Length: 393
Image (cartoon, rainbow, N blue to C red):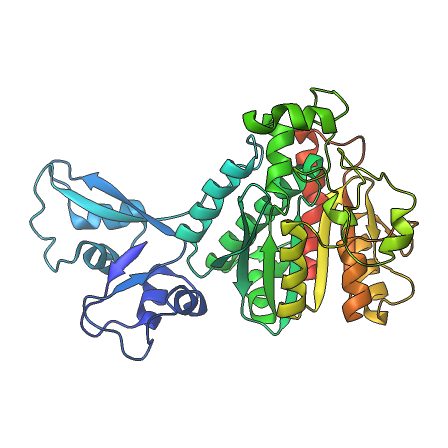
């Protein structure tokens, strides 16, 4: 919600007037000097939207403040007036409304287009989020990142490395929405004050690493690539099992962590799954993810995958002691099994552990056969919310 600064207004006063933590208002207005607000400048208030209301016969400002549970000055500020003593029937005024519902609909047809709509809505309503494009897919869809928080600990969480694991994006977007609402409402999430997480950690969220692949699974092949993709899919018109990017490269088997060894036992040509590519980090998506890890100095990394209800946390004995503690805490929070080593290499978390000797995790959400049905959403989310909260602590 946008308001215009009046003489003598302060960000602290806005926080009190709308019951929003001051730190969130400051972070939503980074271009403003909190100590020198200018009359008439625009300020963003997180967690609110505006609606237009037509005055009914005999209605007073007291009626409106009582009904909407607002301070009178909130209405005066939004409508830029000092006179509400003579309201006219049919007169339109703006009402500030606190957002009490989810912006994200995680059970929708959650392709790239739906993600873009939800990202825009979250940034509009919670403008203390910092959104940036961190790369492109093969088909030039943007790889987007949300940064949330101000703490020293840097935590990257990503989803949908694999196309047919698109439900991980749904789960993660639901978590982001719940976290943002809890922040504005000074509420807890999984028993932890959300503001404490915000002050302790910076969350770097990449909700969809493989947008081309997700769209292929959910919407079918683009017209101009139709025959080529059917050929890569061994003549099969059903792309629901496709894991790779649009070029048939498995993005989570692209990283130089025992890459030459793994190459010998995986497919040698592009296809729906498991092809490592002809060289490591050859794809635009993996180039972007590698660059992020190298430049942003994360303290922890979580990759969300499906399925198996397992937490993979080791790589070749290179993981630090903290990894075991976190893995056990994640297991307790989610009910999943913590597994140190598996016969699998070349993944993003493997490379992260190898390069930085910091905690990295592959979380295998849910159980069954990929793609997991959206009917599992509620159960998976109940397991994941406390785990993701622990990741930020």
